Image (cartoon, rainbow, N blue to C red; front, side):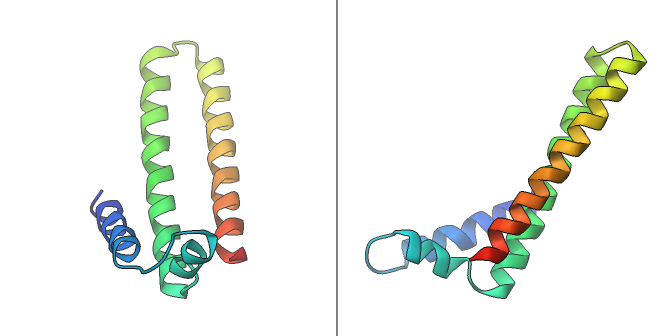
Length: 94
């Protein structure tokens, strides 16, 4: 949570203190630095872990048949891995 809050403050500061209209070029400039890409990726991984913990807890609390719960866990993990791959692709394409 601390990492996500710091990341939000860094991005807000860069947006607030930038001059001119905020378009694609401005956003690409903010995320083009290598340190910002790594920080963004760390925040995405933290957020995905947070999502996994929440989904796992919901599945364990409300889905009683083990087989159904296992399938839901596998699907959730596959979906989160795909989201991570999409984040990597989006970040390092800038």
